[in-house]
Length: 173
Image (cartoon, rainbow, N blue to C red; front, side):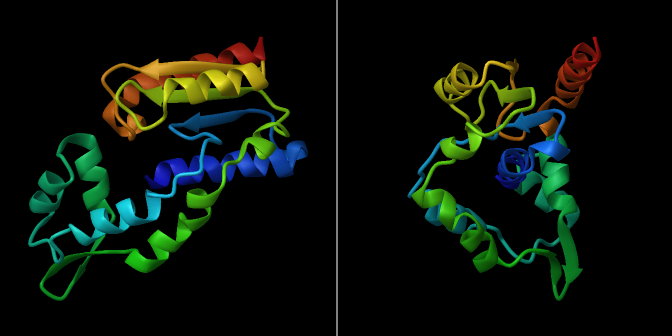
């Protein structure tokens, strides 16, 4: 979820400061919205965490195992009784409040640099959002990472890296 928040931050930076952005890569992130259910959904997910986690292995399993599970578990910190989140639940929910009430198509229309949009095949980003992004900004390339979810960069790191390397190479031509 927070990877997409970072992508939205990058999109807003490219829109607000086009002079500092020569290219943009968005992984499972775009301007669609609003998403009124997002704060409650994230709050419920955070509330479901069995904190404290007794061990790293338990946290990795809770987060689904594999690279994504390891990455989420790595974000925990030792504390009383086990491992605890490094983030405050209420701050994380507040972070997505604006996303719940608006979209960012106005910002997308101000992006001037070429953009690579990376979607996970099973991710949260809908194909029609990516297609609409390309229709409004023709210097947009869309790729879909097979078998990947919202954490596409963790689910299939090699494929995401390959697509990014190809994209940046093509920009140099």
